[in-house]
Length: 557
Image (tube, rainbow, N blue to C red; front, side):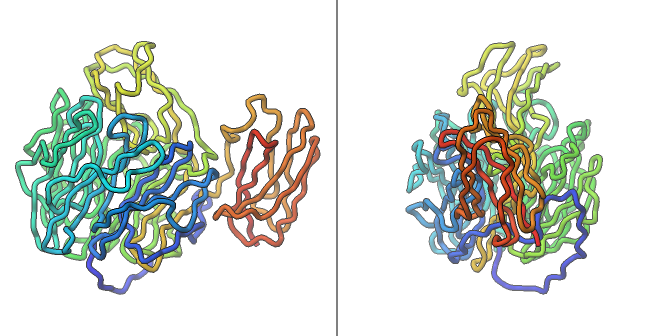
């Protein structure tokens, strides 16, 4: 959310370390199309097994559409959207999840302003998925209020996704009540079922088990007012009265994320400051250790950021500690390294490209490095929510309670989050077994408000740690190695081909355009000339026409 004017931006010194696996410039950029891109989601919309990119356009500048860029089956995307909504609005941020519990991902979107712009309130709406694509016109639209962000989560601990909404319009200092719309078998009332007892200037909202009692609480970050947390009681119902607020008055915060710096660290809220209307323009972190006071100062603050915006906790260098990614208006993507309970103040990565960052998400778009894990959890008290040890979860494979398989209708979660909420609360000494895929060596996606710039993808330059799930189950063939990496004039490919079948090798760029095709058989190494290719990342695939194995190829000069 922003009004258009510019101030000089001074870049911080660039400090780079080899363990940060991203190039300085975006690997791929969508066509700008004059979009004021704001809301961002990553989820499989068309049910082809590959995660797509969803973007809500408009902000407070122009009424525009919700769009989807479909994954081309290898982690690459078209420059233009494959799908767009029929309606237009001043779209804010969005949230993705299976709202009606039919196995398809639906999208909830905040609409900041009404059709006539400032002075007219917006709404929140839901685009349901029909199994192949999102509906063109949203089936659910709420009553009117100003809202810039929304979040899906289980607000009443009944195992389905409810919708929380951040309300207010800070430019006119019009505060409003926070709202929750409770899920009733996939449908919602247009009037909120829950409303906070105080008015706020909320710009963002997030669910998180702040007090660690086994149920999701509700977090609001605000302009002109304090930031608030509303705790859930011991049955999972969220209080209408606030239970915690940030000690610094007039915080002027923009975006929020929730998690732990490491699995053993205390829960924390991290939020970006934005000093356009006031405040100090710093990122603030609040750690929560029992007993939780009614208010507290930040546990950690960053150096001055200025117009801070999107923020994300994610593990970048695979050291078991989450790092902190953030952006700003007309600034670069920046990464701070995690250390114990906090982050090092000097960036370990600063991109060379600037933009007006709205949202940041991470996922392994090409499924090169999906990692499987199984966690066995035995609670000591009744709980409705469990957190997994990895911050970004790509897929939930199965859930068992006391070795009994749980149907998908018995629990809920949201895309790329690491909590699961159960319909029937888990009792003490029950055994919860969760098998899932988590992100390792993921890619970064950014939605950009700049109408002259597209949305960015920073592809992870690390080599895959495992072959594709589409590889032959008999492992009749696979790529064993690619040398050198990065490549300059040629690559040598070592292939294990057990039955000597004919194999086709192809190289594609990040737009999906084929750069060459080769045929081989046997187990001989294959040398390919790549001197004609520009610097960057490519996908090497090998197939017998049925099964497929893929790896990344990085070319430098």
